[in-house]
Length: 427
Image (tube, rainbow, N blue to C red; front, side, top):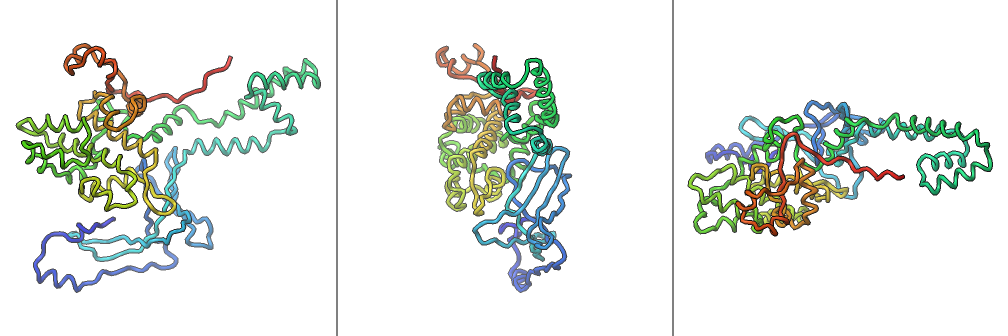
């Protein structure tokens, strides 16, 4: 349980009550040497299923500090462990509060600074291949020749065959071929199935949580998986609504240069009954875009907060939780993969706001990326790239020349994701 400063303050209290409580101390519990403390770790990317059970594993039974937490599902193994760093390790505590939010006790915890995932099928494949390499019979030259015949270029295969022709009889070549085929078959037995590869690829995609069995496009990406309910409730849009007439709302946005957000916010505020949910979505898109362009400031939280126009603290926590990772030195950073993750979250929100059909060029310009990169990201979230119909082109006010540069991304169920790239077969 994490307790912020705001939660500790609670509701207003009478002066006498506050004076009495100030005299009370918080009890810090001590743990027996034989017992394990609670563990704390930071998870970036996808989360383990809630039913996953984690067990402590001692890497060295004599050293109680060398410990990790290991949990497994049918396909993936999760491990939280501590990697050595040059920084002084911080001490963490778990706060126990009463029903009024007042902290009563602190329990010492142990922080594990690394959280890793491993697909079990891929690990079994690696172990199988190592075992196979250890038991392959024959001399080094024979093994090299077998590998060359199985996987080498046509030129290398020809050279090996010519060399072998001087040493073996022609009728022995059939046996060599059968042996090679047998070796390849044995080596590929441990390869993961297509279903296992699909599951691994789904977990590896930098998208919000996706529901592949969704029957409607609204259920494919659920809004609460993108913006948790408590964060959605913390978005305060009244100042934007109050400044609708003088357009002062544009100066209050975290990122002011988004054509998508500015056009739709202006259109939204011109309606008598404002859609508050849609207004909150546009604000969060602006917040993500500001975070994307200010990501180098994540090492300084106060500086980052100013660059994001001082959002609620719970939104700051959500950004760090979903889009940053902890380095070996203990500081936060946004990796290139997490940059793609931020963009995918923005894309899905664009689609939700535009009823699951949006302009690709607008997003590319807003995020300052090439159209080719934007197409790739839209396909990553499961979109289909389509041209505008004649009716749509005229509704947007585009001439035929301009329409050639504009494509739209459409999200439909079932979702279509890019297939893994395969090398071109050689003749």
